[in-house]
Amino acid sequence: MNMNTKTIRLSAIALLVAALAACSGPQVRYGDAKAVETVNANYGSTDLQMIAEAMTRSLLQSKAISGSKDAPIVTLADVKNKTSEYIDTRVITDKIRTQLMKSGQVRFAVSVSEMQNQTEELKRQNQSGLYKNSTIAKTGNMQGAQYRIEGSIASIVKNTKDVKDVYYVFNLNLINNESGLLEWADEKEIRKTATR
Amino acid sequence: MKKTLLACTGLSLVILAGCATKPPVQVAESAVVGQVPADPPKNPVMTAEALKSASKSIAVTDIYFKKEGKNLTFIEETRITTDNSITSTIAPKKIEVDADKANASAITGGANSSAFPVKFTNLADPKSTSPGTATPPTPVVDTAPPSDNASSANTQSMKKSGYQSNHEYGELRYLANPIRGLLIKSGYKVVQAKSTPVTANQGDEYFDIVKRIKAGDFGDADYVLYGVLAEISSTDNVADIPGTKSTSQQVTLEVTVDFNIVDTKTTQIVASFVASGEGKDVQIDGRDTSHKPSMAKLMKLASLDLAEDVRKHLADQNFITNNPGSAGQVRNLKRRLDDDASTLKVYK
Image (cartoon, rainbow over all chains, first blue to last red; front, side, top):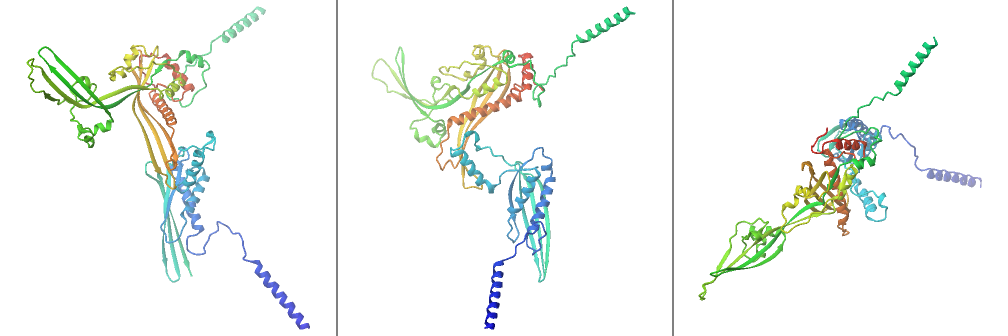
């Protein structure tokens, strides 16, 4: 009888512990978004931050931007991904755009990828007949960008049994839309080596 | 002692009184004309009423135009010559054709030559070709067979055909009003001009502004602004909008006008330029929705745009200032009023 009671008690405790363990799930904690990430040698958040910061600083010092009386209007064009990895290059240009906007030295016109929303909004306001005429954002008054930002990211990857070496080079250009002249260009190089 | 004190006091009072009545030193008004970047405080003396009464007057004509057309003309002339007299019967036939079709006709060996089953030779008769561009004719002369009649009457039948150029002259009445408005805002008195009636067989003397000035068509205006329509065109284009699934339909009305301003006293041209205006209707996906633009709206936009271009040219040529209604404009106007109107001055 005593033996049976002991067995039941032990089983109940074991079951409770198992149930608690099952309910606890994975552990979550916040980290520093700007902390250096070295999980592997692939393109990562630190690379994105380094590129954006370097390019923004250089671009703001360029004659086209710093020497302009009024904040010039710029638009984002393509940044081509020439690496073998999947890299969302739009995130890079968006980050650069955010930092440039914060500086107040540049204004941005909607880029090609944002035109669908812009067109639909203009169409809604101008052609639906629902809006008061004096408040309508009229078709034909969009401002053209003086400059466009475009570039590319490329990589060279070398592997041995124990070592993986990755070299990234990010190029960014500022082009005068009217003259077609390249007003500014810079590059950011990153080398990452992973060893086992 | 008292007398000395009184004398000194009296002298001091006289000196003080003299100082008080001394007129203030006049500062010469800077004669700044032309483009004035920043206006100093406005001159309170130059009121709107004073401006109105003192300003120069200008007459603005409606926009003249000359339209060229072509008519296909075919004349049969029968001429009977007797011993004593010549009797001529002319039977003209006229077919109106578009200028472009006419240009592509048999005269030029164009593709549409078969559309007109007549032998094309240009008209010989100056009455029927004037004002035309005819080349020397090759009339077809059919001589009738000799008659048995003893009275020896001779019958000749001539067939002449070709294109007769015609020109239509007139005035466009709806383009000049915004220009009149800007001149009024610039301080000019705008005088109503008489319209020009078109006469029979009107030629390019229709544009003879000096003749009209001498005829008193512009009253006592100091200047006459007149424009001749160079071209008016309408386009309807559809283009893709990159990055979207939409298209934009753009219907555009463009006018180009050749302007001159003539001093009515000296007939000197004091400003001359070509101005253009554009009215545009942009509709997103307009072709898909069969959108029909309003031509009245386009005409209004084109006339306003034309007036704006006229304003820029007049300012470039120092006929008005860049900022109508500004103090700089008032000073310019004052300066202009003081000028001898018979000379053209270029201000810097």
